[in-house]
Length: 229
Image (cartoon, rainbow, N blue to C red; front, side, top):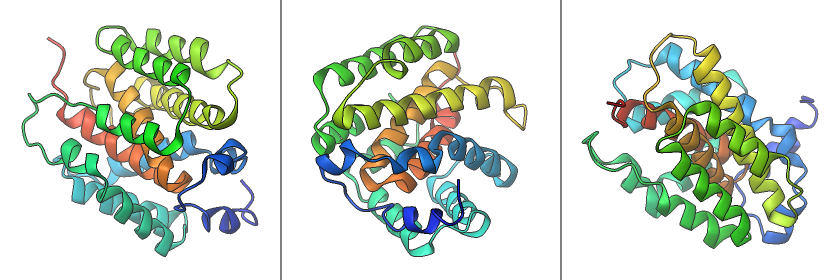
């Protein structure tokens, strides 16, 4: 991505978009959200104590974006503030027990309320999560490629399909082939889906919000979803 374009793109990072703006949001690809998602995960793995806490995770992610990538500090801080004030945040991050259901429904509902996507694309995403309950990561990856990535979506659906598939496929590559610390991924099909779901919800606050929330939810899911029996 051009360093000349980056400051201009970031200035719009955490603005709530109208539906019409999202329909033509060509800046999304310039942010390389999926690639940045993986870079954040790798950075977090190098800095984390492996005792997950959302406050620590947010701090590490912020440091990476501001100190390493030189993203605008005010915009990153504003994104974090807005993300942590959403109704779904405490539901997903305040529970202490790994045996409790890790339910993304509230986030998907907020995505629907904000973007007003088609019922068709939301049905595909919901079907992917159901598939992730039992299918292999490869099966989930292939489902997303065939049913979300290659289809000709229009209007806001196009941007949602791009972000969800981009983050999921990059997350698959990270966890399944390039995980830098060698740790075993728990319920890998669900974790890569939660990565993508978090990125989708974070898009409410712009591309930077998508990067932050995808990484935040990824680490939380891998830490707290129980192992397969």
